[in-house]
Length: 88
Image (spheres, helix red, strand yellow):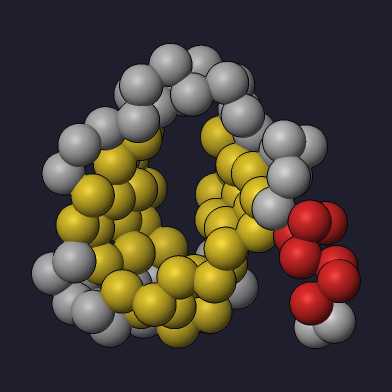
C-alpha cells in the first residue's frame, strides 16, 4: 500500500491490523472499557476470544466475530493463527 495512505489505515476513526500469532500466544490482560466496535476475521489457524459476555472460537477460515462498545476481551491463539482485526 502507498505509504502516504498510512494515516487512513490507523487513525482515531479506524484501525486495521494483520496479526500473526504462534500457537499459545495470548493476551492475558483484558482490554479495559473498550468503546470501539471491533471485527476479528480468521484467515488461518484457531483463535479463541473471551468476551465479557461470552467466549467464542474462530476455527474455520472466514469465521469472524464483531463486538461493540463496552465489550472487553482477551484472546489466545490455539494454533498458529493469522487474523485481520478492524476497530472503529
